[in-house]
Amino acid sequence: MTRTILPAAPGVGYKPQHFDDILAGAAPVQWLEIHAENYMGDGGRPLAQLRALAERFAISVHGVGLSIGGEGALDPDHLARLKHLIGWLNPASFSEHLAWSTHDSAFLNDLLPLPYTDATLSRVVDHIDQVQQALGRPMLLENPSSYLAFAESSWEEPAFLREIARRSGCGLLLDVNNVFVSATNLGFTPQSYIDAFPLELVGEIHVGGHDTDEDDHGAPLLIDSHGREVADPVWALLDYTLARSGPKPVLIEWDTDVPDWSVLAEEARRADEALSRLRIAA
Image (cartoon, rainbow, N blue to C red; front, side):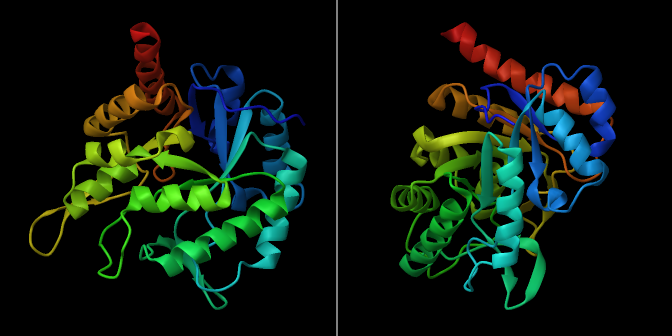
């Protein structure tokens, strides 16, 4: 299979129940993202479907299990399986999270935050170097959604991500919903985050839905759930971002309570409208 670049167009996270609908007519969707860990097995329907889709669409592979920010070494078996997947699929993009999800031999079913310190930065860069050397390509690193701030952090998140990219040569994945969630939870303006973010390093943008709750003091608490439509303020923040970055590949994430294809396609249409406004303005 031939690797292509991700188009500056809408993409969606692929779910097997949408396979027939996608083949019947995916417009305006022009690319698909898969979670790496769902395709590390041998053979079967999932890989057959993926091979068929890869003949028609650019594919982005998104990892959730490398634990890039973990204190321990990367799992060599996990990295070997990922290398095998990337080798035969040859996707347009591979990305992972600025987070950790393993401790010793235990895998934690969550993406957990990191303090932004010099020691953390060095560890993350070392891990990214290992991944990029193993895969033979640069990766993208995604900004997290945050629910608390570490007192020991000595870096602001955009500057931290910029420095990781500078030292490792990786690109960045900007999750606009994560920015909105973190800004609400931690009390900063999402626009100021976007203004500080190294948009020139962004290879992919994500938007998704979030849930609304309250903390123990009754203040709004947003949860990055990927289980509903993108909220209007997040669409507005996407417009703000694209006006500064220019056209980028924009992914709709919807991973829980997955709807019918028509609902997901409507979200992709809204992303296409956001990109179209840039073309009109130009």
